[in-house]
Length: 189
Image 1 (cartoon, rainbow, N blue to C red):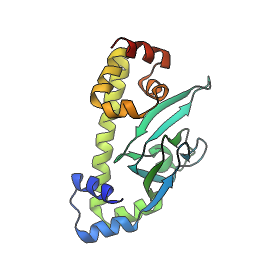
Image 2: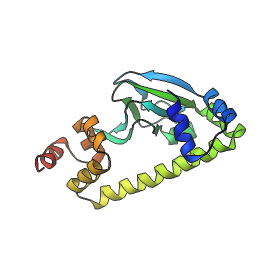
Image 3: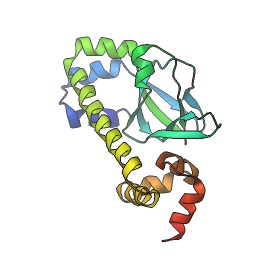
Image 4: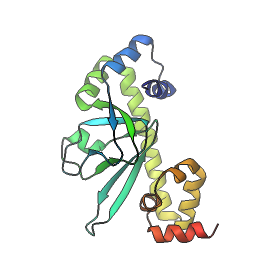
């Protein structure tokens, strides 16, 4: 199962066999049931999670009580509250499994040990974070620049399998509109 993680790492940096073993020695694998949370608001995030299989959502609860999804985590994606992880302060986010899943868990402590013993790990995470940051900026641009219909069509074109996999109300939350707006957009097909 962790071969997916090794394949992902090798897309960014090349690890020899010893380095692969070192990486795996710093990880644990955890099964997460559908609807189970791996992080709740108010708790301190203590790990990075690599989605081996399954799907997660990261969200916060607005003052109105409405959930606002800010990120999804699919197979071969990392998900975590990096602000809480790095600062040691309580998170304002929830991370919940949308379906049964398995994750590779890299605790903050093990991440630091790995970084000090294997510089390629630090390079890998820097490259992954740079890519994630660029994607976040693009998402913000879409939220501000595109209409709801344009956002949906762009997302549907970029991730068609994902649109079928995630409940529509969650997709609407992530795209920044209501499920009713999504229903109207989809009806226009």
